[in-house]
Image (cartoon, rainbow over all chains, first blue to last red; front, side, top):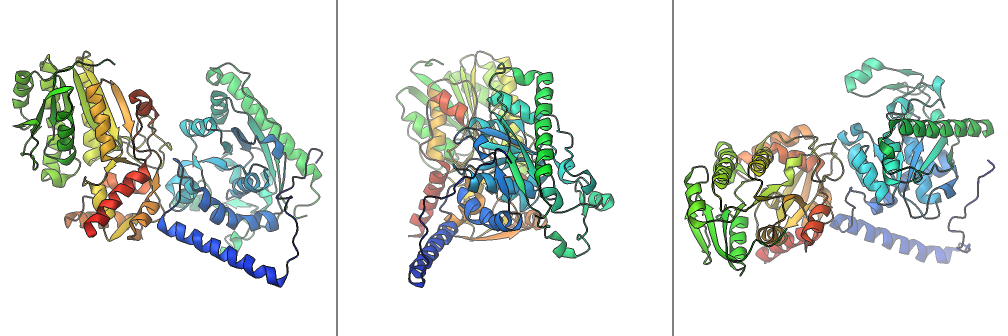
Length: 303
Length: 324
């Protein structure tokens, strides 16, 4: 990748020799910290924002569970992080794939851990997410909310990084044969939200997620029975039962592309459907081109 | 938005219940108000020296006579009741809430001296459900309209109030949609719920809750009476508490039941007279609801003193005092 940059993470810390003597107080301090965390949680002594985002729980529990997947399993390489602002709002628009929305979660880890300002990604999810027990609860605690205009605009106006996956279920539920082919982009509601709040759109391409669960068929009868948008059949699921839930260890790349500014348009630009469609197409085109570029550069799927 | 002048007569409905009584006391102590007339079907438990009590049922036309004879200028409607237990049955409750409001508004419409109407409504008119936006602003329509109980009564009441505002455009109508009241003095279905030794919740859901401290709520009603702020406003303490977090702060046990068990469980404990568990409340405890209060704080130029967590803490402090 020509514009990839190595961003030092906690690079200033000197590397200390890890001797047995100084491991012990370190461990003790970490245990104490963990105990204080548990006590705080049990006493309800923490803060959530108006949307139910619980930064402590997100960082110490949810993201902590996802980090090994990010670092060791998928070995995600995030690039273009300089296209994400440090303090102001932006709308991250990315391709969606891989049966369960792991790509969205990995993008969240990328922005939290690899971005110099450790930005929280606030995603817009479908109402099915918030109807489902556990899933809806966890999504709120991780800072996500329902995909609707008032919420998108509220978050962008508050200077948050908002993530949308406009392909929705068409993207994650598409057969393996159609991998890396962008599906239709909804109604372009995300563009209208960006125009109204005058925040830049960051087209983002994710490569690797398609190969985690190669969906060879969709059991439509089962999906209709369960009320789900699709029911995936992969080479390992449901054949191997719970083992089939383990994603294949593909190598991932996430590239945050050149931002598309929206502040040069007039105030009521969001009410011009032609402009909204054109911008939607521009975003879609940019993501598709980046996908092709990343795929060309990729050595092998699991490399 | 000017002052309505000194020497005013204010009529308050529902004075025999906690909030109505407190409001009547606060208003009667205010020098800008000449006279406070309290109306309810039963006499108030506490004597309110500054208030003239009229025992009347707002469900019958007697109320029109009271309004006309005293030359009432401002009517404060605090008489919408939240739980069937307070009324002695759901049928009576609905009658008091809906027919009572209709009669009161009919009387107000006929009384030329009435210049302002303040209605205590509730945030439950927004309903609650998975398709809700994260925060409700005043102009939003409910995505899951309430279908029963207090919430439905309240949205009907608001409908009649809007109708009245159209027919009497000279009257300044203020509708205050409050989050759940909580505090050291008030007893509501919520305070009973959080006092249960084992608190049931819906498995897999964690609602976002908002509270308004009783003093803050009454302050907003008082301000709406003293100065006129026509319109509909959301009123709640800033910030939110998750249901799980609130329960942890009470120190009580939590039992998470699957949704299909929660509703029958709630029904059986409400039949046992422990707590009023309505379908709307179960939905609220499942999906929660948060109000955007920016309009009220900017229009009234006043911020609630207690945030949602602080209001909840003041309720918990009362419990500790009573235990000691």
